Length: 216
Image (cartoon, rainbow, N blue to C red; front, side, top):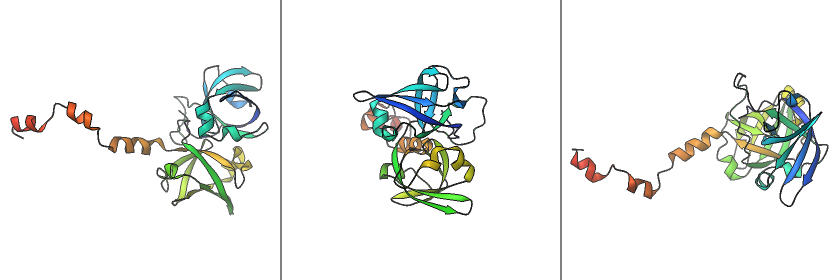
């Protein structure tokens, strides 16, 4: 689990493609501290397992499912990437619950300065927007951000100078794809509110006859 508070901006050193998968090599320093092979690191919000380590970087395998759901396949060597290690049990929870499992991608449609802040308008598909609520949380390339406005085609976030300066968001331009992860709470609530399948109700010991037998 992650918090969406980016620890470091690394650099994609290489991306070696297989038939449907790839191996990425990330150049970094901070996130290597106390990290070992098998640990999880979020790369632009994507939870990846460290498969190799060396001085100045790490490697990770990326499967086809991850490439198809994220913007990772569109990155090139030299691109900056947001990095965050999995949250330590004794750490502060500064952002929101981020699983590192990307729901889909959006596209930046507008970037506008507003005094000391910068507004980003992100166009997203309906299956993403259904879980986006004003003043709720969303992870953009692994950055925990608060939704300021939302409509039926896009949503907006207002970013402070610090967040923009210490993340790869500063390199994003109009037209750039971004990874999106909805707040997981909304998805769980929706699932729990769905009626149980008919076969479940048939197997339940609580029936109309049972209730009548016991005076209900």
